[in-house]
Length: 320
Image (cartoon, rainbow, N blue to C red; front, side, top):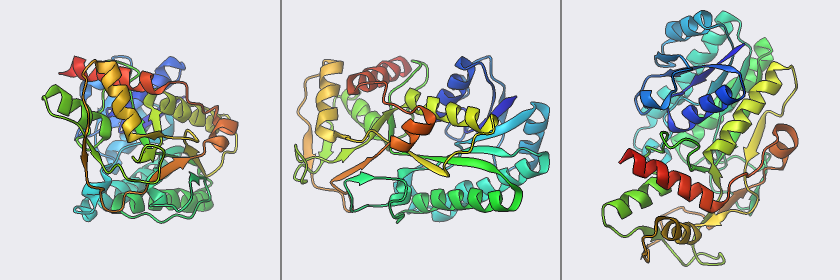
């Protein structure tokens, strides 16, 4: 048994590969290295340098490595940028998923864990998002993730594909100091880059109807997230029936100001964040319930906010 991890050289993908290794399950990383890093993949795991758009390459990887299931993380993940690059987003995230599913069908691989996103919900008008909260994606990225879920659903009807989708919000931290978040758009890298460069981090709006006036979101440690992917894969491999989708959430969330306070405490850099205007369309609070995932996947928040910040900061400093 081996599982193919698409996007396996990326920040999240490399942690998933590491979690497979630690669980004693063989994994194969497939990545075109557009944003992934070869050095993120350990020596125990084969790295196939290929795009999911290359069906032949995916089929070869599946056949040569005896793959029995897929964790699908590869794609274009920048929601804001996707508004300016909708065709690129759909090509990578929708066409890429179609090619992957074609390769799986051609080689008889019938199990997949799909990396979806809280972006499928858009800006919900509820304080706590559950799996059947109405879907209203507000970016090509969010739309592409919802289409990905539909593709799995329809392929399951057609071929008996066994699948589940994991929806999550803000992934942070590091489970290995050699693996770090390389995104130029995520909060933690933005804050750390500002501090390293001698700039003051910025909060976009402090007048929201929340306890401290700043946005509240779910922040999840990447190692906890990786364990959920491996458990979902293990259960599918064992023939267990899973829900079509699970939210990986904290149930309560953390505010942006709480993150800034934790960053100052962990880094030892005393700063007062600048307050800028609200960003258009930013809801005050989006937090998800992780109850279903806790029931079926053993999902839990094993790391405190300080753990998340410290591990991310340590990895960032090592990468500098």
